[in-house]
Length: 176
Image (cartoon, rainbow, N blue to C red; front, side, top):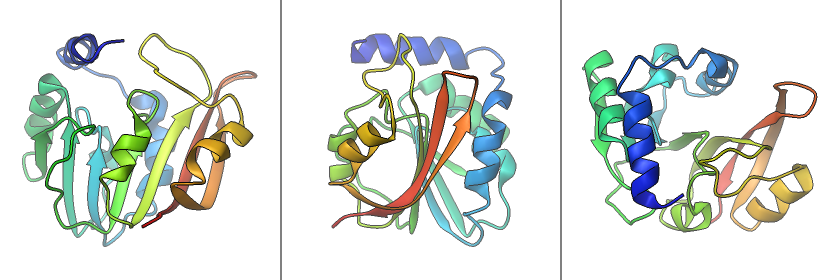
């Protein structure tokens, strides 16, 4: 999927009411690690993670979708959101943890991670194809092969969607 097609797709998705409830178990798990943290969320969409906030120190969400950022700003006016292409270098705010839910399968994740400071990161990634996925790991060996050069993992948790589909929630530190 070309970049403009990807942007158009997510602008359409976020232009109507967006039901993110299927990812609630991931948001709840990730949210449990964010107490008192300065958070940078890559690919925040309309901000569904924000409904699980609990005493965050600071939060900045970025996304490539104008409709997603508009929805996030509308639903969470007290938080900061920016329209940014994360594959291009940009000035990152001061943060101590990065959250990236269901994003790395859509982008050149190696390029994105190369722009980030060596801090803690939590991300999720599916093991299945979709029309908007550029890449996905079929199993944990492929997940490790792709990310071990970039991230020191603490936790890899598997959420089984069904007998075949899985989503991995990963926590670690970006290598400097």
